[in-house]
Image (cartoon, rainbow, N blue to C red; front, side):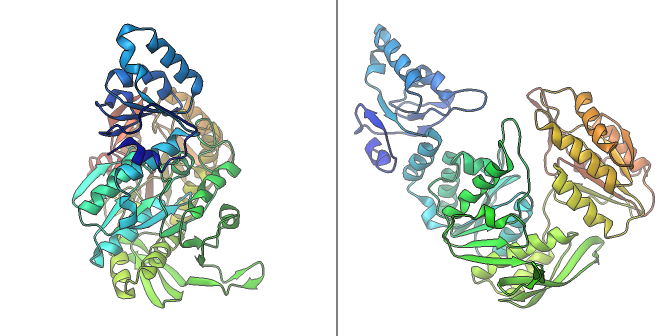
Length: 508
C-alpha cells in the first residue's frame, strides 16, 4: 500500500518527505518495527514513543507519524549530523494533532475498512458490558449468525480464543481483528467499548450499527484513569456520536448526561413502571413480573418482556442486573430480526466466565466467582444475593494496587454492610505493599458493623471460607473473576479463583 493512500484519511498538520513510498505495515511499538513500515509515536503513561524515533528508523521505518514537534526536531537534527544518519534525512515525517487518532484512521485504511463489512454492536457502561456482550454473542450463534466477540476476557474469531490485555484493544489490533473476522466468514461483531478505549481513540473510525448503554456510575476515577465522573461520562458519550441507533437503559439516572449532544435515533428499555411520578410510556421494551428462583441448581431470574415484543425469559444467573443484561441482549437481537424463541432458548443457557459464576464443590453451600471490583458492582452483587436469603453471605475480596485508595474504603464498607462475613485478602497488588492495601480496606470495613478477618494469601483465604462454610451459605469470591493471574511488581503469576476453589473440594 502506498503511504499517500493511507494519509488521505488522516488530517495532517504537516508532511515532510516522500509520500509515494510503499508501506509494509503500521507499527506503534518501536521494538516491533519492520523494514518499510510506518511508525506511529504514541505517548503513554509510562513511556513516550517519540523517545524511540531513532530506534524505529534504524529498524527500517520509512515514515514517522508524530505529535511532539520538539522531540521530533531534536531527533532529525541529531540524525542529520551523523554519517550513519543519512537514511534518517530521507524518512517521511507526518505531523498530526493526535497520534492515537491517526493510528486508528491509518489502521482502518490499511486493512481496507473491514468494519464496513460487519454489523457492529458496541456496548458501553460501568457494569454489565461483558455479560451483555456474551449474551448477545450466544444468541447470534444460536441463531446461526457467525459472529465475532471482542471484550475484557477474550476476542473470539471462529474457533480461535485470544486472551485480552484491554477491554477494548488498541485500534490497530481492533481493525486487524475485524479483518480476520471478515476473512473467517463473520457477518457481525459484538464488542465492549470502555471509557479508556473511547478516550484513547481505539474505536475511532467505526460507525457502530448499534451502540448500547448498560448503566453509568462513578468508576475508573483516579491517577492514570479519569480525572472526574464528568470526564468519565463524557468519554462514554463519545460512542453515541458514532452510531446509527442507540439502545439505552433509561432506568439509569445519568443516561441523559452521557448521551447529551448525540443526534442518533434512540430506543429505551428498562424495568421502571413510573418515572418522576409519571407512567413510563416511551420504553421500547420493559421487564415485568420479575421473580427469583432456583433453576437447575443455580440461582436464577425470570421475567416477562413486554413492549415491541412479548415473551417470557429465564436466565440461570441471579439478580436484577441479570434482567438488565439479558434485556440488553434481547433489545439488540430483536433489532437484528432474530425470533423471540431463539432469543429465549439462548438466554436460558447463557453463562459467562467469572461473572456470578457458580463453582460446584458442595451440595450444602454455594460458591460463586465474580469480577466485582468496585463499590457499585460489589453492592449490586451482594444485595442481589441477599434476595435469595442465604444462611450467611460471605464475601472474599481484595483491591488492586496503584489505583484509587477511595475504592478500598468504599468496597470495605459495602462488604461490611451487606455481607455477614468479610474476608479481606490480596487482589493484584502491583507495585504496592499488600498489607497497605489490606489496611485501607479494613478502614472501610470498620465503618459498618460486619464481622471480618484478614488473610493476605488469597489461596489461604479461599481455603478458610470453604473449611468454615455452613449449610445454606453463599460464598462470593470477588474482584478477579475471569482473571487467571496475580500481578506483583510488574510480573503476572498464575492464579485462578475457580481452580483454587475446586482444589478445596472435600475440605468442607
